[in-house]
Image (cartoon, rainbow, N blue to C red; front, side, top):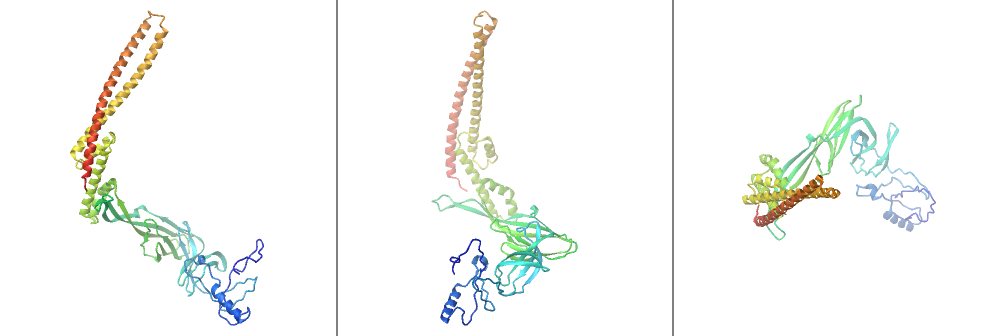
Length: 458
């Protein structure tokens, strides 16, 4: 029957028949005449029950068992059928795997498939001195395969996993120049940066102590998984290593009572680092270039070309700032930096930039003075308003000395107001002249910087 239709299943029914067994070769069939038997045999050969592919993930084939004798299961009945019995080699071990438990060691049976058959997946029960201690999943095992069957935690083994900073290392293996096309339509290339081949060394430290007083651990495993970053690290430690595959290694130790041991696992990975920015190139020349040249990793010609790239990028960035200057982009800090590296920029550019910066500062100072005078005018208006109110209150007392004083103060305020306005006007005229001169000099600087940039080469 290909499906459960027609079985008249009621709610909460239980199906016990979950496996259809395939019988071996035989004579007469119980299903009828020879013709029917042959047809049934052909059907069995094509559609016998097999394990689902998801159940044997990693085997890449179906597991088929042949029974030693024919077995018949009547309809609507179930049976527990013994397929075969195997004696396999196993060892009691303790192991530590931080992916499973980063605090405690795990008790396990290290099982070896020396049966000559493929063992299908399922669930297994673990008995210790005829006592049931665990039931766990059993993954399929090929011939000569092995696996760990976990059956509990062990608290007598203390494991501390650390990554000491003094054991980590990054070393440079090679430095090459990176080139790029000048533009989309050009076939010529120009150096734009460097490519650094780095070797990353990562060391993991395991501190393991057997806290038991009278028990010796013959086999203690440390399952170490390599770091997957940087394209994947490779474990290079071989001492005490009993199993190693890509990205995984197993190490075996023996622990006497109260003994403490240390295991350091080394991993290596290579990484390519691209350095293009001016600041990063300058840092490389300042902190790493000399040492790499002494180690014969960086050749003299490559070092000289990197220095030319840095000079080119420095001048190019300075020219870009001059070209895009909007009368306030260039700061005193920028000019001071250019003056400290005056051997990189032409002298006449530094002179023009210094003049522009001086004019910018003068325009800024005038603007601040004009703002101050405008605030002074506001205070004059406020004081005049007060004087007018006082004079209005004393208008019936024409001979009052206080009234005369108020009128005198009002005249002084008016004179001050006129003088301040005249000063502001003069300063605004001077400021406009400076701004005009500033724009002209910035325009000239932009043109000269544009021409210089066209002729700039590494």
